[in-house]
Length: 453
Ligand code: 5AD
Ligand code: SF4
Image (cartoon, rainbow, N blue to C red):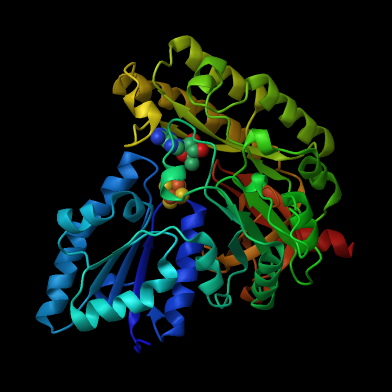
């Protein structure tokens, strides 16, 4: 087994699943004596945990590698070696090509193999080998990972990985493989470990989390709603969230869970991608807008205050002004608490990349600006509606101002509060007094005084 008391720097790109993977990577490396550092120049091992979802994210890795090379050379002058690792989805998609394009890289490791990183680092350091591992054994990865040791008030927990849906724009089925659900027992154990480390909130992750169907003790599939119910019984754990969902897997028991399970937060991220049925068909989304709206209606029936979030792509091949207007109209009708929106980015290997009718870049950018202006307005409106209300806030970390703590409301809004540091980790009732688009300002005093009165 390799031996080291060294420093590890990890930069995480992309989605929450990558953040989870980075947490697990820290835990794997801590087992062999590594400590984390925020300063790349001090790190013996630099890991870039990369994202391949859009071209911009993938290209960023190469520009970062240019900077890292300079840092590595400076360290070399001082006699210090640096092992440079490209991990995650770009590693999976480009594999060996990365070694050719970026000679500074020592190890390329896909998202399913990072439990093997300690051995690879040893080989790279001792034998000066360059290594590529882009295997796909998802089940093995989870089996080989150590217990949870990271302390996070709000933690991620991957319950499902990969995707079988093959939306025509998306690389995920290629980078993360087919859909895989972890067994129930394994997830409950991990959730308990997190709660023991002090986590108050857990977000269950999956590329298609609501398609979760992990096996119980008898080998029978269990739904996400059942999994949430089970996790909700864990002492100390106060809040549960899940992301990302697909409209076609939004089952009745999951909708009802939003009514019945108090610890399940009133927040739903349900991407619709485009408001035009024609474009949805070309995207192979396999659902129509009517169905999407029906689901939201049913969710709002059981949980009227639910905060809705979504993903939207504009400028998909063949998108006309009319199709785009349908997207705008859908947003106007639904009213989102927040949303992620992107211009379409053709990805190598995906079906949509070879469609001839690509939308011109400047048209897509104009559409995105228009959409984002509307979404901004809606977010501000959603936040404004909280003013004057009292919300339970999980206080997580110090804010920018002295004496300030920052936390999250049930609706995932950031809330700034003047509060003593001892209150970190508590869920406190906060009076919402002001808002910007991105956060709320709360007052603890008024909330507590009211309780005393
Ligand atoms: N171009 C633009 N956006 C994309 N997404 C996925 N693939 C692409 C692409 N090729 C967006 C989708 C998805 C989110 C994670 O990223 O909206 O839901
Ligand atoms: Fe990016 Fe998708 Fe990979 Fe997450 S799973 S890092 S979003 S490509």
